[in-house]
Image 1: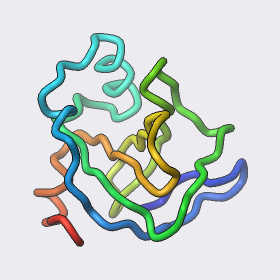
Image 2 (image 1 turned 90 degrees about the horizontal axis):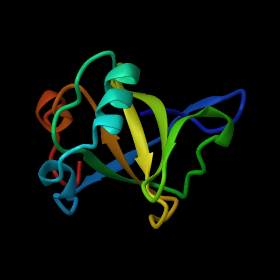
Image 3 (image 1 turned 45 degrees about the vertical axis):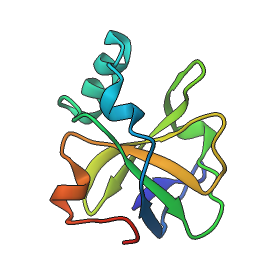
Image 4 (image 1 turned 180 degrees about the vertical axis):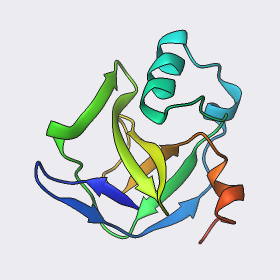
Length: 116
């Protein structure tokens, strides 16, 4: 996955797929979130997210935050295998955890399972 880690550098980092809590597939997006995701992804996102744990703590560049949501953390633009996605790190999550939001179901498209 390629993500902005500084104001001038994007870095490819490794991550392992993990199970999430299922909230993103059950909760309805606010119209504001849906509008922002559609704008940045150039299409509607699919329900659910791909949860990942990085092989080390990762601080994303504060200069590259695409948008923030009160109580839900920050969102950055990124790519995974050349597919555009939005990386979300909720405020309460550790630096090695993130969720990926996309217009395709990333688990299916990339044939990923927990542990990959």
